[in-house]
Every structure is written in structure tokens, then in C-alpha cells.
Amino acid sequence: MYEPVIGLEIHAQLLTRSKMFCACPVVDLTEAAPNSAVCEVCSGMPGTLPVVNEKAVEYALRVALALECEINPASVFARKNYFYPDLPKGFQISQYEEPLARTGRLTFRLDGADRTVRIRRVHLEEDTGKTTHVPAAAVPDEGENLADSPIRPFAYSLIDLNRAGVPLLEIVTEPDLGSPEEVGACARALRRLLQYLDVNTGDMQKGVLRIEPNVSVRPAGRTELGTRTEVKNLNSFRALERAVAFEIERQTGVLEAGGTVVQETVGWDEAAQAAFPQRGKEEAHDYRYFPEPDLPPLILAPDFIERVSAGLPERPHDRFLRYMAEYGLGEYDADVLTADREVADYFEAVAAQLAHSPALRAGEGEVEGASDPKTAANWITGELFALMNQAEDKIATIRVRPEDLAALLGLLAAGTVNAASAQKALAEMYRTGRQAAEVVEALGLAQ
Ligand code: ADP
Ligand code: ZN
Ligand code: MG
Picture 1 (cartoon, rainbow, N blue to C red):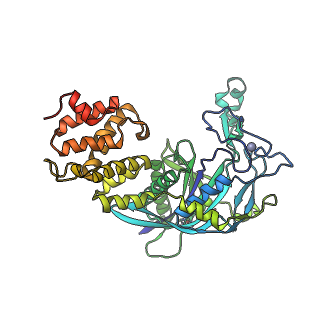
Picture 2 (picture 1 turned 60 degrees about the horizontal axis):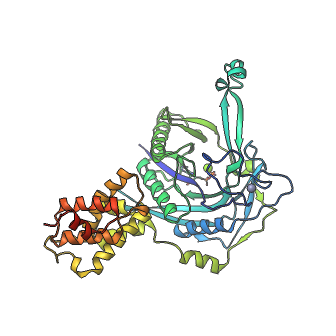
Picture 3 (picture 1 turned 120 degrees about the vertical axis):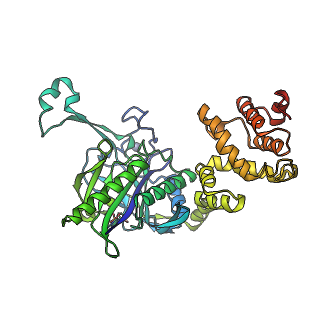
């Protein structure tokens, strides 16, 4: 029997307006014209100097604090040297020996229980440009004689430096995860946290959040780690879980057949649902890291850390636990309501309204308990979400305000309307933005 061991490396673009070391705007790669947000600094012209983006440091710090890390009072930027056409400087500015933060943890939920993954480090770096290889077959004239060539399957490559220098946060976990499901739950929790902190949109399809699992297997009970592979190109949680499951199975097969696992980087082929070798594992010494001579150590003043810490929102997992404890919600409702911070705020505003108007409280109307927080939860995740899905709305822009929904639930609790009428009233309130009592009156819904 073999047991899987998995650690995650996460790269998250930070939602700053400008890039990490220059004033270029951060643009959407799918919308902006290629190379339209580029300057001398991010295109690597000789003689230019980087300047650290303070907002990026603040966002990174938010994440590090929310992950309960020890903050490094003086972190150091380093050059990670390698050549790639979309890296015109010939090095990436990253942090190496002295990262922004270390030794934290993230708690997440799986199968009704809390689990914790330890965080090894959190550091700041910059993204590279984006290369698009154009297959020879796609180029009619020139392509014809190249298409069959094993040496030149690509006619040419396109480089877009709009992404070069975009602030990137790297988060590395300890190898604490033991199954594809656990990896999925952990990754989802991390995305939710980044979204709550307003530092990343969580859009994996667009590549602004990239999660790379390192996977190994070892004989069950053994404490030594097995040889790992690192999986790249995962653009959904589903792909992440599938890829981890694939690698566990493949490596177990190799070991069972008496072979050895090769340490390498593999790519995930979504169409084939299989991983394929990409390159041999590079080691730190391959990169010839050295401290970036153009940037002084990043010193974080205690009052800056204090200010960022004071501004942190309640974390999603804490909120999830609180919704179960304080409002008596079940796992499912608490999870759905805290998936999105704005939905969670909305629910809480409805619940507060119910608690503050004694006449609306549970048990005081004819329908026992009809306006308690659980009922509010049901109406939000049921009727309201259905209306929002139909209209493709986000909760921040809907016309039914929390107090309007609370008022409707109050009428329901008082027995003024029954559930079917309340449903009709809500649809009308949703359409027109009118208040509950008004709609019930106008449509003659009172019983
Ligand atoms: P790098 O990939 O840059 O060499 P590390 O060696 O620090 O970086 O490891 C990266 C990730 O791989 C971390 O999340 C770590 O927990 C995980 N990891 C390291 N060794 C193993 C292993 N044998 N099996 C599974 N995961 C591992
Ligand atoms: Zn620039
Ligand atoms: Mg790695």
C-alpha cells in the first residue's frame, strides 16, 4: 500500500492597479492590445531601475497575516536568473532566502471536519510575459514545408509583455495533504480567502490564480518523503483534482512494477486527461539566485503591519464556523452563504434586521420560527439565488435590499402571507425594487 503526499505552490496575481516595479497599468490580457501596457522597466531595458509597489506589499501582507504567518521585518528581493523569450531582463525579481513571511497555516473544511495545512512561505515576485506558439500548420504559405518538420513544429512565437512585471504572490504549503479531495478543498479555501481579502479575483481560467501540486507517494507508514513531480497547466479545481489523482495512480504503478519515479515537472493535458513530462526538475542552484542590487531590503515598519492587520476582514472559514454556531445553520448553508463575501454580508444584514425588530422574531408570529436566521438562509439560497441566476445578477446590484427581504419574512412569520404568496411577492420585489408590504397590498397577496 502506498500513501500520497501533496504540497501546493500557488501563484496569485495581486489586484493592484499598476505593476510590481513600474507604473504600467495591470490590464486584462484577453482584452488589452498586446504590448500596450509596457515601459522601459518591465521590458528590461538596460539602465532602468525598479521601484517597489507599496500596494502590492500591503496586499501580500494581508494574505500573510490571514495565513497566520510570521512576518519577516526585513525581506530581500533576489534575482532568479533564467532565459526565456518572455523574460526580457533574463531574470525574474523574486524573494528567496528572506521571503516576506514564513510558517503559517490555513484551516479548511472537508467532510464535516476542520483540517489544517501548514504554510511554508509567502513571497512577492513579478510575473513574466506571455508567449503564444503558433503552430506551423496554422500558417498557410510558410507553414506547409514546416508542418512535417519535427524540429520546427511552430512557425513562430508571439510575445505579449503586458503581463511582464505584474505583481505575483507565491504561497508554498508544507506537504501536508493526502488526497485529491483534500487538495481540492484546500485550494478552494485558499481561493475564497484571497477573494475575501480583495487581492485576487480567483479566475483560474484567466490564469490570475495558478495552483501547482507537488505529488509523491510512499509506502504507507513510512515517514521519509517519496520522489515528487510538479504538475503545471491546471486551470480549474477539477483539473487540479484529476491531475493529482492521475499522478498518484501513475507513480503507484511505477513503484509497484519495481521502477523509480523521476523527479520532474509535468504538464496536464486537459483533453487527454493525462499528465506528460515537460522538463527535468530544476534546482535552486540552477537559477544562480543573488540579492537584487537595485532594490534595498524591504523593511516593514511595525505600525504598517499593525494597520494592515487591523483592516483585515473576518476570514471565510471563521465566518463559516460562526454561522453554524451563532445562527444554527447546517454545514451546507453556512458554506454556500460564506462562499462570497457579499452574499455573507447580505445574509448577515437580513439576520440583523430580524433580530432587531422584536415583532419579527421567531415564534412571535403565527408561523412558528418562520423568520429565524435559518429561514432567511433558505430564502436567500433558494428563492433569491434562483431569481439572481435567471437574471445573471450579482448580489451587490439587486434591488431587493436586506431590509426588504427581512420585512417580507416578517409578513410570512406573522401569517400575513403564506409561503407561495411570499414567493410571488419576492419575484415582484426583485423586478421592481418595491417594498414587501406595498407589493403584498398591490397584488392582493394577504391571506
Ligand atoms: P521547489 O519546487 O521550488 O523546489 P520546494 O522544494 O520548497 O520548492 O517544494 C515545493 C512544494 O513541494 C512545497 O509545497 C512542498 O510542500 C512540496 N513538496 C516537497 N517535497 C515533496 C514531496 N516529496 N512530496 C510531495 N510534495 C513535496
Ligand atoms: Zn512597465
Ligand atoms: Mg516547485
